[in-house]
Image (cartoon, rainbow, N blue to C red; front, side, top):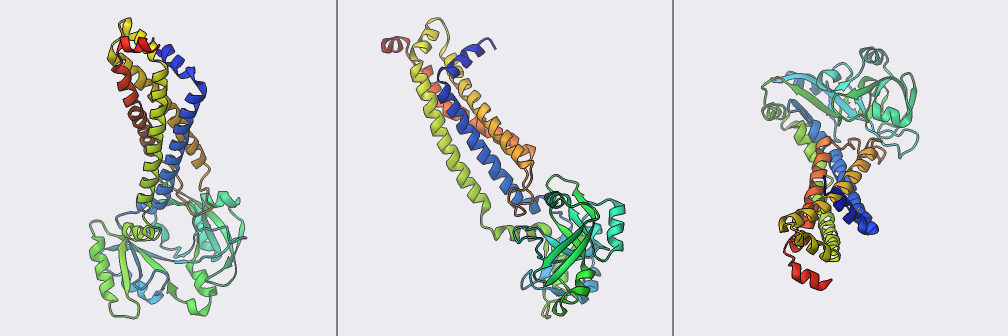
Length: 380
C-alpha cells in the first residue's frame, strides 16, 4: 500500500489518456456482457431443459399438428409418468410489435410436467374454473401492466377472430433464467371456438419420464407406434428439441467468439500502446528508481499493476453497466425473454479483463525491467 500514491500519481500524469484507456475497457466489457446475455437468451432453453422431458411433434414439421385421438396411445407408452400438450396460438395484442408466446395448454396436466413454473394455488383454481381463463408470466404482465382480474383481448392470426381472456394468475419461475414471458389459456376453449379445420388437433406433446427411463428408448417406441401412418411422429429429448430450434438462427457461438476476439485483440493493442507510451515518458523516473536500489522485478511489477488497475476499473464499470441494464429485462420486446447475465458470467468477464490487462502490460513492463540506468539517464 505504501507505493499506492506512486501508482496513482503515474495514472494521473496523463488524465485524458488514462480515462480513454479505462473507457476502452468499459466499452469492451460492456459489449462482452451484452454478448453473454444474448448467448444466454438463445441458449435459455438448453440451460433449463430437463433430462426427464420428451417432446413429441409431427415428423414433417413442428407446425404440422397431431390428432387429439393419439393422446391416449402416447400416454400409455411405457416409461411415461405424465403427459401434457399444447398448441401455438400466435395472436396479436394491441400491436403486431407486441410479440410474446401464447400457448393453448391442457390445464389439467400442465403443472405435472412443468413444475418449475410457480402459480399460487388459488390463482390456478380460478384459472381452472373459467374456460376463458388465462395465466401470464410475470415479465409479460409487468411489460403490459396486467394484473389479476384483467380482461385481455387478443386478435387471432392462425385462429382468426377476436379472442378475450380473463387473467386469473401470474406465474414466476424457480430459477433466474426461467421464461416468464409466456401466456397460457385453455386448449379446450381454443378447440371449442376455433375454426373447424383446427378442431381436435394438438401442436405437440410434452412427456415427463419415469425415473430411470431413457428418453431415446421411449422416443423410439412412440415413433414406432406411428410409423407409416398418416401422422408419423418425431420424439426428442427437450434439450435436443431446443438445440434444433436454436441452430435455425445460425452459429451464435461462433459469431460471439469472432466478435469477442476482434474486440479484445484491438483492446490489447490499444492498451499495450498506451502503456508503452507511459513507460517511454517515465524513462528518467524509472532509471532513478533503479539508481536508488529498486530492482528490475519491482519496476516490472509496478508497470503491470498500473495496467491491471486500468483494466479492473474499466472492466468493472463495463460489467456493472451491462448488469444494471439487464435488470430491466428483455430490451427487444419479447425476442430474447431470457436476457440475463449470471454471476458466473460477470466473474468470467472480470477475469478476462484482468488477463487482457496483464498481457497488454507485459511487453512495456519487460522493456522497463531491461532498462539500463546509464542509457536511460543519457536520454533525459
